[in-house]
Amino acid sequence: MLRSTALFLASALAVSAAQLDVWSARPEIRTVEPGSALKLGGQRDGDLYRPRLTNTGKTPVHVKEVALFRIAHNLPDATAFYGESFQMLSQTAGTLGQPIDLAYDELKHYKIPQPADAKAVTGMITLTLPEGGLTMLLGFTSCQRFSGRFYLGPKSIEVVLDTEGLALGPGEWWDLEEFLYTTGPNRAALLAKLADRIDRNHPPLQFKTPPAGWCSWYCFGARVTARNVMDNLGAIAHDAPQLKYVQLDDGYQPAMGDWLETGNAFGGDVQGVLQAIRKQGFEPAIWVAPFIAEAGSHVFRQHPGWFMKGPDGKPLPADKVTFQGWRRGPWYALDGTNPEVRKHLESLFRTMRQQWGVTYFKLDANFWGAMHGGILHDPKATRIEAYRRGMEAVLRGAGDGFILGCNHPIWASFGLIHGSRSSGDIKRTWDTFQKVARQNLNRNWQNGRLWWNDPDAVTLSGDMPETEYRFHATAVMASGGLVLSGDDLNTLPPARLEMLKKLLPPTGVAAEFEDQRLQVGMVRMKDRALVCLFNWSDGPDKLSFKLPRAGDVTDLWSGHDYGRQQGAMEVALRPHEGTVLVVR
Image (cartoon, rainbow, N blue to C red; front, side, top):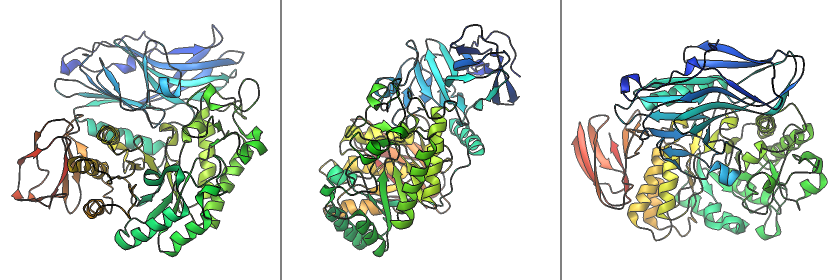
């Protein structure tokens, strides 16, 4: 049980004393009704805490959020910071004094509410001191009903559960989400501990190895045709048969939401294309955004009662509360607490799996299944529950198919997906290559533990410098996750095709980095080790490192033979260059 003394956590600048005394905290419960008779208790087990909120009064109380801990600290501004997000396309890094968005800002882009005087992140944070390397990790290890967040203010941190203003009846209680606070000198070990505890609360879906394949989006976009897919199927069969999954991406459907129909522009029958993929000995894969629909779709016009509602009782357009959607918006969000919606989702995916033969589903726009601000069919449910119930219906329909989550609420997806997109969309520019690499590599702790990470497609076509393609391919190798080609393989130069083939099959093992500069990453495998090296700068650089084992060292991309090596090595890299050293 938490002590009821007032919370003020003072962390000394000296490494030996720089730990947050989290467990001395008194909570703050923020409600709609003043003077509410609420009690926060729970169980403490070492570095874990399982909170429970009870209404000891005689009237219902609407609870906006529960601040489990309000932490004042004296950590230096130079403390390295990393924080996860509610939505996959947001991450925060940098330092406590200067946090940096690695992708979209949750408030500006997704309009997720947060205090005006704080920076909000979701799920977990790490704090690494500039001297001595001690790391503190604070993280939520479950996400059954409520989203766990962190509010960073000037010299303060709040650890908060968003209870969405739901009513807690007299004599009722909520078991809130489990929380972990741990410290140590090895940041990677702390992240592994977090992942292990998440797995205990949300057993991961099993899929033996990360898939490899091809997708249509990054060469044909929404204008993809049946001929485009068939032409690349031929190239895959001839040149890269390890690309087992052939994915038809966004563009085949006539409207967002009508996933079992074929648009006129596609120029062919979707089922016929999928059957052709199967006949050639490959696995049919398809893109679906199960939780959204556009206003002109058949599903929206025929079933308006299936969607999250606004205060007026009508379906809520996404642009009223968040980002409207990137194509054919504003979108409307299906309500996973509605039994009819769950029947629809289960039927949709059962049709695609059993009748269409699809074995790989890329789910996109999943965030809208947990969209904030909507009124749900089940008034006692949170948006986390709406999403999780909908995803459980998807899984029932998809059977043994592989499920990839994209644009998803990360914590809410625990135990519901086989693969997780771990970055924003790739684009053939250096700025995007390095941004996407940084996003992916910061999530290496998830790969092979919670799910397989998807670093997005490998795009090796175009006329960028060879060094930048090596950087991009090295980042995909270092992620240890899925490998999907995003190029028109009929036009890919032979040398780039060979680079792609060297990424196959995926290793399934993510690199572990020396520090958050992400310059030297080690991939440890049974028969070999890989040293992934990155020069993020605009000038040449020399990287020094210690080999994980003695052995014969060769450069994966150039084939350069370094001979027998052990101990320390130094490798010179050109601007924007990455490479992989194979140690056998």
